[in-house]
Amino acid sequence: MRLKTTALLSVAIAALSAGMAFAGEVTWWTPNFNEARAKTLVEKFQAANPGITVKLEVTTTDGLPQRVLTALQSGAAPDIVDVQHGWVNGYAQNKLVLPLDDVLKDREDYIPAALQYVTWDNKLWGVPYRIETHAVIFNKGDFTAAGLDPNKPPRTWDELVAAAEKLSANGKSGFAITGGGEVGNTIFRSLPFMWMVGGGIISDDGKTVLVNTPESVKAVTFYTDFFKKKLSPASTLENDGTANRRLFIAEKVSMYQSGQFDVPSIRKENDKIDVGVMAIPHPEGGKTAAILGGWSLVVPSSAKNPEEAKTLIAFLAESDSQAVLTDTFPARISAMKAERFNDPILQVFKEMLPYGRPVPSHPNWVQISQAYFDGIQRILLGDEDVQKAMDGAAAEIEPLL
Image (cartoon, rainbow, N blue to C red; front, side):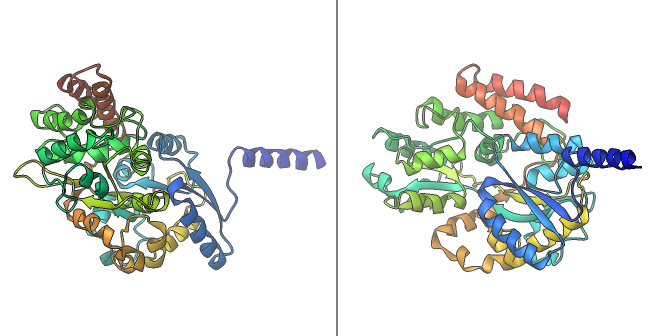
């Protein structure tokens, strides 16, 4: 009997060491930019729910799409994962996450587009807590020094290029684009330019490749020319949004696209910069556009403790919790009333929200966007011209549709 008991104990220990979760323990993967806020909310949640222990695991955005997808497909996923809105429907269509209709309350208090992003087959597959669009952050002092009026920033593509050229004349980079790091950095910054002229990576219904159409090639040319014409930093091929923010703080970049989440870091690390924000410039006679981005919470199909995970998500979905967790705008309308969202510098970011569009919903979006990103890198490396690079991307994307 003793040998049998020892053997059973050994099996149990081995199972635990292989990743078996304890009853009542919720493992939550959250990005490093959320770490401090997530810890605050976990402490509050556990105080109110002593029967549930939350194990917080911090992720990094570089390589995150593939890491999450691998975890979901392997069956060894955590109980909750923070993911970008655009990834959710692909997970749902591949049966990798659980529906969360029983978790979300007060739907009328949510930005409709945020819920639309995570709805498929009339079911809700994620709970959105953060929404955002980009704008262009610029150094007002650099504008003045270059003879530009900081109160009348560029509104069109031609004006943006002209301003970037003047700003680059003093040894700085006028307008920094991204070409490295996590794929989503470049998607968020370049795809809106494609939309502005009627192009895109794929059609909204996910059935047609658009990446190599004349409209898309025109927009990609406009985007990549900032690097090719030396208006973006020499390190553009390695730079993601964080790198561009650091260059802006170091006063080596005068303009770059990003979200409001960058503003606190700029103010903290270089309070000498007079920060300006403008809408993303558009083609002459056209309208601006932006990706409506943000993050949602999902429960993997292989979650060990899905009910406890849903309890935590319900807490994180509360209005007060959303006002804390997001570092852009909350998905809940009532959470927007928190004092921290009244800062005047957020006004342009708010004005950009109505121009925000979701990325196309497709189960292979992660692979599709990677193919496009690889094409962008070939252009920036000088290996291929824009048309050839986008033709190559189209050839990779077509079998994925």
